[in-house]
Length: 342
Image 1: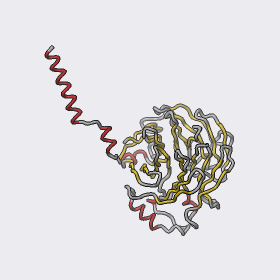
Image 2: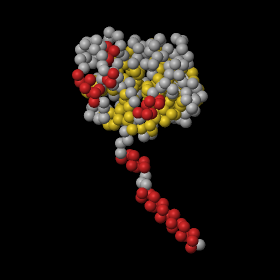
Image 3: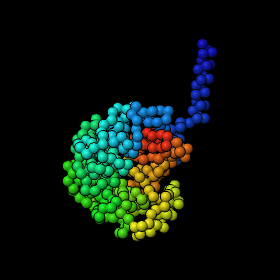
Image 4: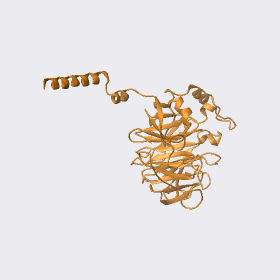
């Protein structure tokens, strides 16, 4: 009995000492910003971990409230659904112009509206927005006046798209009701005379129906209220860990000449944006940049160089309520969905 009590005492002391020497790691991580992360393959369509569905060009994705992930596979002209554990559930859609068929391109996107129905921007052939429920049933669609660069929804489920390219329209944002009727046009061009291709922008709504317009080719953000009135336009804070060469290119660039082009470093300031946890997340090549709703820098999470070489480019991302980041990636040897771990 004495020996048993002695063993119990020794084990108790060792446990206490171990806690002192190795404190709770999660607590430490909350105190320290972790900038570098690793992309862990979640669904692979090539290499050593093949998916049950052969993803070809997964350019866009989104996630529902249950943790299911939906991928817009441009190469296969379909939508692919996985559960929260990465298991294939089903796929639907094929190329075409009829109801429920898809005419998508690498610039197309998939997002949820406020009723948690899937909305797909069909830029390439059909120039429309098509809606499906989460089981893949076709609901409706409507044609847009111009190809949609991005899409967002307010609390009334009105559809907002941003436009650019060769349009002769002075407004960069168009608001539709759910039946496709135009309700408003707003958002003046950024700089008169600038190449219209550089007016491409991304739209996101916050929980108060404020709309944020982030320009793709230069670090500027606009905020509109729920009545589509401009609240502010400002340069995004670049004091954080940004590429300094890109900053120089931006400040020295002559926007007034339509023939001018940005340097390679700055050709895309960001490619995607989402609103989550009361802040805005931007995707810039291999980095996830987090800014506040007033355009101030919060943090930057960088994909490790070796991981980037292995998995190629990131094309879209989504953030869960827990803060996990899912991305689509396309590389020379690997195609699939990755989970950003920090």
